[in-house]
Amino acid sequence: MKFIAVGPAGTAESMHLAEGPVPVPAPGEILIRVDFAGVNRPDVAQRAGLYPPPQDASPILGLEVAGRVAALGSGVAEWQVGDLVTALVPGGGYAEYCVTPAPHALPIPAGLTLAEAAGLPETWFTVWANLMQMAGLKAGERLLVHGGSSGIGLTAIHLARHLGVEVIVTVGNAEKVAFCLNHGADFAIDYRQEDFVAKVKQITAGEGVDVILDMVGGDYIQKNVKLLRRDGRLVMIAFLEGSKTQFDFMPVMLKRLVLTGSTMRPRSVAEKTAIREALLRQIWPALSAGHLKPHLHATFPLGQAAEAHRLMESSQHIGKIVLRVGN
Picture 1 (cartoon, rainbow, N blue to C red):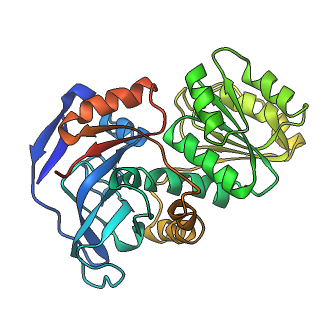
Picture 2 (picture 1 turned 90 degrees about the vertical axis):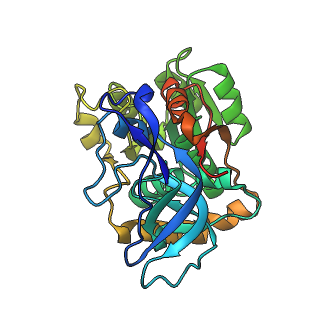
């Protein structure tokens, strides 16, 4: 099979097509013939040597795919060869074939293309785990999302609207402000033009927000704490501006705040399966009904994975980027 390999430099330019053996599904796994693979920030970090895969995972980039089941490992009863699926994968998505635990695959929601479906698992698994399981987001609360026009950000907006949560987002330009407002955000702040702390306080009449989903880190961490109401929760999923900062913990104690964070990839098969079951019950029907609609920004052929990564690193995209793997 063909796959994307990364050269020793770890740069986008070092990515190239290579050939290797088709993986064999272990017991409880399925082999997927990949049509499309999602591109995500963790892929960029892995390429640069900053996010190594687990020891038992494929070293090939790629954490989500859509395609057709090509083979079954022993003990798999839920899927049949030929089924169309989208799946969270432990690695190996930038390839013509990849394997994943069978319970990490989901059916293609009605009305969605395979390209759109390929961009669902990583963002929905991540947003559900962090906002629902860890932050306990619930109807009637206020949510602040940094990076609101990213794949994660738009998914968080959709979840908030689905739950009946007021959602405020920060983005980097006027085009992204307009896009987020048109796709369900109650308020969108261009952080390059306005102080988002002052603006959020203005929007909320000084009350602040209940939950913040942050992928920026750095000095945003202290700013986030200023905006949390009593019993507020800050959930960190990435540190684009660094994980180290000078920090005053006094507001955490005085306001009974919860600061937490997580990564998806190291979670156990059982943990990811529980997230998958929740999504299948509570989100997939809304996707099939057209109430939630992913936004696909760009599609690149597998051989142009470097261009896809450069776009991801530029932060000029809105929504998801995917690779077309199959013919």
